[in-house]
Image (cartoon, rainbow, N blue to C red; front, side, top):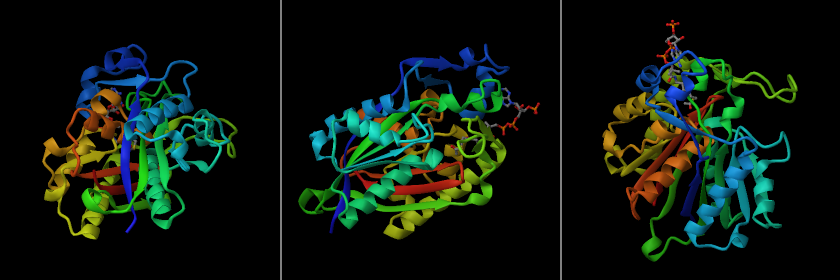
Length: 323
Ligand code: ACO
């Protein structure tokens, strides 16, 4: 059987690190409030003129190098983002051009914070159907550009960054026998589209708009939806929570992650937590967290890794893979 094997990972954070104390000079907030409610200590923000495509390209190059492939082998680029450089074309085609690729397909996926999990699930389907052989999957965001910097209830939560993986068709033989994506599940429920949204867009206002959120409702739904999709991933594979070596969740808020881990019975030391230093980087958060745990040696070959995300829409989903 053809399996989708993640063969490389890379990430990029903009240089500028902004602490909670820095934010307390702009809005009425404090380090104590932000840390207690979210676990966030700092976030990185893109420099003036630094675009989603610039960060996506840096993460992509790191993933290509990590996989040890020639960029020309890539036949599909799928970029999860809510902050494209332009309304169109897709930011993925800018990355394609910058990589010097003139073949295959490149497109963006809009699923907000679930964008990377959506993009990875599409990559898995393309590979297993024979449509693609080597897919570059990216999550990249300049989320800071969507923030209302006068709204303390949202502007303290988010950051910018990018992460990428290379996914390749594996034959599932020899030492690779059970490597790769084991199962993937996606969901959305548009009844909740007004709980977390941007109040603008090309069709409605011809402006970009700002993030608006009902934080408490988002929190409540996040814990339930994430736990549900983890349960369905385990049920689909006959595995249990005890089999999971590493949980790599979307990094929205430490309290959401603690609540989810508790609900499914995962010990805190199995949870990869980068929200403290990255904030919520939307579609970039899962590959950024994955890359952090790969580079510091926590995730090793053979480990069972569970990725999940939840975001505006609501959208949510999970990918279970053997590293
Ligand atoms: N600094 C200081 N005070 C603040 C701040 C701030 N940055 N933001 C809000 N407050 C105040 C509020 O004005 C309110 O004051 P009041 O009682 O005088 O009216 C008080 O703090 C409590 O506000 P709540 O919104 O009730 O605070 P809550 O405990 O719900 O925490 C938070 C807010 C952190 C946003 C929480 O609801 C949450 O984490 N929700 C999840 C949202 C999330 O993670 N979204 C990310 C996108 S979705 C995703 O990725 C899953």
